[in-house]
Amino acid sequence: MLGPADRPLNIRHFAALAATVQHGSLTRAARAVNLTQPALTQAIAGLEASLGVTLFERSAQGMLATEPALLMAPRAEAAIAHIGSPRVTGTQLRALLALARAGSYAGAAEATGLSSASLHRAVADLQVALAQRLVDRRGQHVTLTPAGQRRARGFGLAMAELRAGLAEVAAWQGKEAGRVVIGAMPLSRARWLPEAIARFVQQYPAIDVAVVEGSHVELAGPLRDGEIDLMLGALRDGAEAEGLAQEPVFDDVPVLVMRAGHPLEQAGDLSAALADYPWILPGSETPLRRQWEAMIRHLGAEPPRVAIECGSTITIRQLLLSGDGLTLLSPAQVAVELDAGVLVARALPGAFARSIGITTRAGWRPTPTQTGLIALLREGGAALRQERLVRA
Image (cartoon, rainbow, N blue to C red; front, side, top):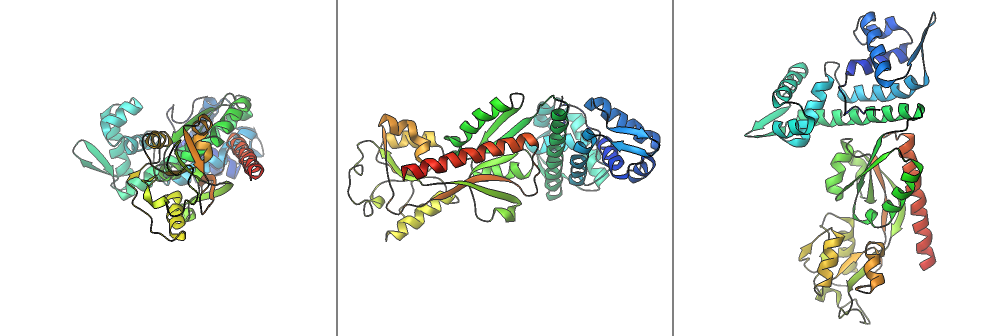
């Protein structure tokens, strides 16, 4: 089954579906979406042909919604609410999203296969229909106005709802299909996520999985915009104010990591020596950096200068091997190097734990497939907690 990003969308078809489910009558539904009854009937027939299912049983009592209609209707209602206007067409929605992601008409044309002229026309028509200026042209590049940014976010969330609805209908048909997009911060990529994905693809072989790597700052926006389904990694304070919901899954206790043969490898008391060596740490906005600063102050010193800020485990590993730098990492992130003896780890003088978990959009309704992935992530987190208890 093609997803909504792969074929033209008719927003009114989905509006017709939602209204007919709600009212149970073609006459009342047509009035609700400002269509004639023949146009509404045609819209439903077109959607049925597109989905390959029967959405309603026609009877003297009205329109009785079938199971696929009941699955799709809440998603359609949510999508229409996110779009925010009955005047928006599928082509206009697709054009603004492509422009928002590419930053230029040329880039959007390349991404969509549409001509730049078609995209210009669609965005211009959208601005007229909404009576809002959505884009500012600056040379070859385009930036969205605040109104344009709000519309693009709403359109992205609408697409996410429609993708979810289509996936649920496909599963009902026994043609399970779809795609799960996971935002992965560094710690989740060591063991937790790969082990969950390995089990997930065995249980859901028809579902594609995409992993988008990045920091919290890089991933939170795409998550809120509906481009990412869920985000994994260290949890943040204040996420609720950003429209995000967090679920703690397990705690991670970072360790001090250095090269084999480092002067501190065999040192007795580390407390007084931690400020004497260069540090390689993630940016100041990360929980790990703030916890490191608190640890150093707890030991009676001011945090030393961090000469190298880096969140890439691969880069940090190479930097450690080439000098006397220190860092904090989860043992799982450098398990291979620790086992090989090229890096060594020591417990911190003031050990602390960081909460690792799942971040989603507030109010997000996962599909059964997405719920299955979350269950596997919870099981994996429970196994990691048990391992830590055994080691302790």
